Image (cartoon, rainbow, N blue to C red; front, side):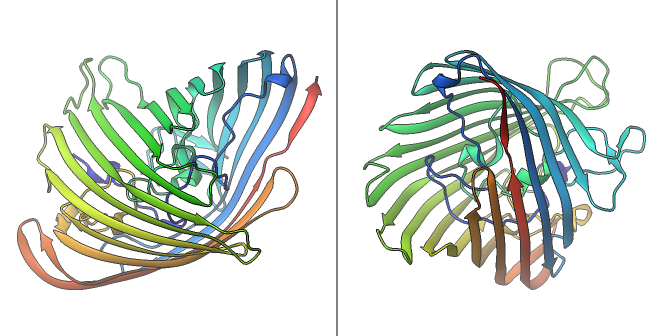
Length: 404
């Protein structure tokens, strides 16, 4: 199995778990406004970005992402609790004029046999119904990425810039008791005798509220589950199958202050596990664990954070490889690090300018003190890792009413 397909090689740039009520650069409002019944809107959703990663190389390779994502689409409300959206998803990296024509999970490998020119293009369609105010059912392009509210142990926020929009089915439940998001993302569909098997991701992200999420003190229990499946019942040229999982759970404490300078203090304590449910090809690790603590302080418009991560034989399916125990830059050599500790301080800035315009910037460091490095089961020696990432992001997504 190609582990690179399972571990995105991208850096983390936003810290801490997000409450469902929060919005940021990479979340979308998913509820239906019932007063818009019969109206038609045109939306021009744009994220421009420049993000740079510098690393010492043996865990992951450094790179720069300069580009833009565009999602122009029409939004129509045929009934008070129904919404339809149709358009196109477009991705362009500055300096590139051809793109591999297949599903993106991270930076894709080049496939010369099939490519798109100018932009990486995908049709966009979403059908949504809200039978009761607490429940939303979505088919087509689901509310993915940052909307899943996954902890950073499981999901790399930079995938909001690079991965294909998630497509499949989704159920979102939100009440005073809990926020629950359950989804299926069909990444690759296959016909008979295809070269590749189907790829499906199933996930659940839940946060159970012990106290009122709007109170000055919040206590919640986040539970996150991710399962990736490579396989399918149709025969293919390469019919190897695999199913891997990540599970995380813990506690979230949030103190909110009525103060123009110090606005919030948040602490996340989580445990996570990795398991190879089934694989026709042996992997470096079949199961592993991780422990994570994350401090986040909101001062003015700055988020100051310190994350501490400890893991053993852990493969994070959608996370930053810095937080995993397998090298993505030396994958062909089977380099791995059975136990690691990562210190991750950082600072981020985000501000809204009017309706539908947000700007963000970040800088953070990753440091792993001396740990053992293996080539397969052979000890290579000890190693220190240091990396940093910095970026700027601008999202402009106006909605223009064509018909009320």
